[in-house]
Image (tube, rainbow, N blue to C red; front, side, top):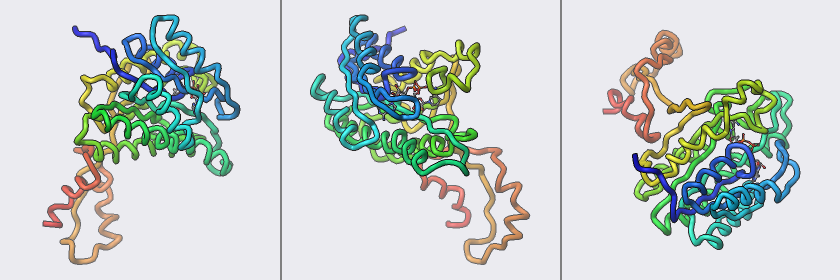
Length: 302
Ligand code: NAI
């Protein structure tokens, strides 16, 4: 079996000073990549900043014989995103891989959530994905090669109590990916989204410690590194994982039902009478783009 290597590749991992991101950075470097270890070094709720988180991971990588540089910028600003990419280009000449991983939490039930809690979480996860990915893809297009990862969460994909801000941001990154996979289809730039599960600072108070021993951050790395490898040709997909389980998830549409003839009006009662068929997901499938949903309407449109 041939080994998957990243020799000659330059990778940026945001939020790589701890948790899951640290593991990506270490594994990429161990397999030959030159790594930019970005981390603002704040607390779980996004307050504060420190260079020590990124520095310690860079030290670990160097001690193991790898190559890495630290960056302490905030992913949530355009200046920060540009500077993270500039760090890679100044140190290593290019960007091949971007793993958008940085994240914070400000949990609160919907009715109690403040504007600040909403804005901050959206800024780091959703705007942050835009701020770093735009300059990174500009650099990737110049080289005709790239692998990009967005980090979603089951909280956004399926729901979780007290996380409407986080869930919206985490579903939002899949929306960015859905556009980018189309805009970059003609380049060798593959973009995928992952929803990891791990016992980390982010989850240590919600995951039982014993279960946490099995939800090691490391278990997310093999899947993410494969998606970041030259061999991977998948793009625009969402993968969920944890503890050694890996699977694909997708937004799907059921076959639904055609009512009327695209000319006569349709009544509320016809929706009621067809509601079981309309909401049935039997025979559902994912779609490559928004326009592919038109295939369901064809009996009416043609
Ligand atoms: P973590 O809290 O251990 O690590 C996140 C890192 O991001 C921290 O080192 C933090 O300093 C850094 N960071 C935060 N805001 C930043 C900013 N504005 N700019 C640069 N760096 C910043 O969390 P963990 O668990 O490793 O999470 C990594 C990613 O995976 C996050 O996006 C998180 O939302 C996501 N995730 C984690 C899950 C889990 O089970 N741990 C579940 C689903 C998603």
